[in-house]
Image 1: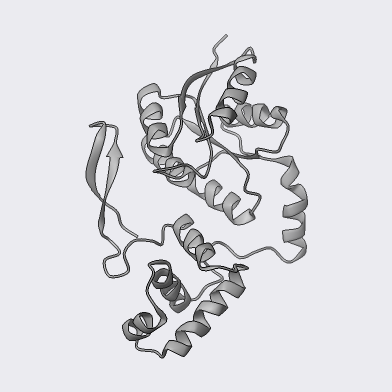
Image 2: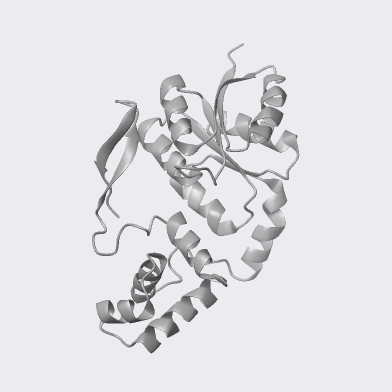
Length: 238
């Protein structure tokens, strides 16, 4: 019997230690590699070419979102199963849009994770059944708009600059508006997104890839590439 080859990527070693024996106990599954951060996950996936990568969202160096996008582009035969604590529907939409085949909550029963891996291996989408109430509530409200559509172009611009640590005065100067208007935009964005802190704004912007430098949105960044096994310059376009 051909077994599904799996790489586990989670920065919590206890999570990996708990999942590995449970997955290996399945007659049709085997864990072939592990990773404790996002960059290590990219290396393991590039080297081992697993059938399924079980990935956490919040990992050091490279987020689960970035890992998912990279896998979709570079290793399309590897299916991504996201296992996370985040129950936010925006997270779920973002990961599915990025190429994840399954989205499972860490608080779910192990059987759900196993089912998600099997579904992804068969190229079938799987959403955690415990998200049903959240999805139903969202639909009852008429459904949330697609990621980013809630915000106007100007609001996104202000959010980017706030996330980059610019003051209201600096933003006002760049956008040729008053500092009071900047503050109005900032509060409007936070209200629309249901955020209460500046840190929440930064996290929201980071999740959507909006943290390229506002003065040079196509700026180069150093990323690991499997061809060389080390960091190389790569052009990143917003």
